Image (cartoon, rainbow over all chains, first blue to last red):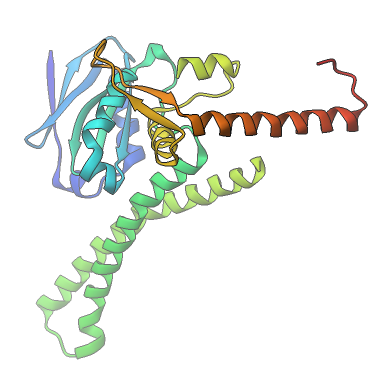
Length: 182
Length: 80
């Protein structure tokens, strides 16, 4: 049996890595395994509950541009299935019976992964918030339409910030853990 | 990956993304190299280079020194 779930524009623009992973894994717990993402739909097929563990990675720029094939090859060699991708976001799954599935097992690459994502979120947040504020700051007199537009820009920027903050917190937590180990 | 897990008594697991980074770093340092095998196209095989072996030996002797220093300090209860 196939089940399709619409992937809203909001969800594809503001990807919340952890929430998305948890959602896919709980879908699989309930017997629906993500098979692909196509034409704006998540396509699920029925599976035995909990067959797979899903993980999402935001690929490194250099891997995404030059080494994607060899990266995905290694993944498959290690029994990890590339399921879907949108831009640098890649969705993977592995059979749960093979044990706990993580993409990164060392603290440094975990930190690096979160930093990669946050770099993008903070830049986008900055762009939107600055452009939302600049008109008011520089020109003073603006009409109603401008006000609404600027508010929307600032809201979008703030959403990017709310995506970034949890990662910043995580990065700091991981850094602390790293100092403990050293 | 399985080998690492077994070797370390389940303490270490090497996840795919981490492994990829490790292989790349070792290749860049020239400590391993890609070996072309027509036996199986699916699996990539890497072998340790001469430099790689030298580095391993150096590391082993460094660990040995640490091991012996540790024994000396604690009174050397443990046999080799």
